[in-house]
Image 1 (cartoon, rainbow, N blue to C red):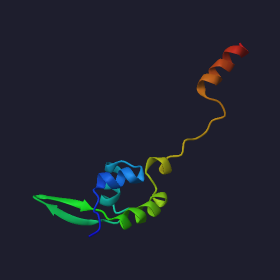
Image 2: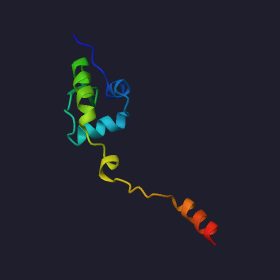
Image 3: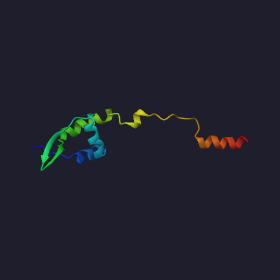
Image 4: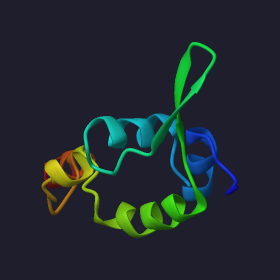
Length: 89
């Protein structure tokens, strides 16, 4: 029987938070692993093959704000422009 991993274990192996991995599953960005009943709880049960598949998928996932909002680069920061204005006077 293959060793089954928790979402927290898988997230740690992949270098992301368990919350992020759970969000990706909920939003359909990654596949949903097998569900296992433990008492009255239902938990995700990941296999080693699942971890490797996720490792290949993660770089392809657009992760929210970092890709949606691109900060406009100004040539000088506001502090530098204020300093330049003082020097001109």
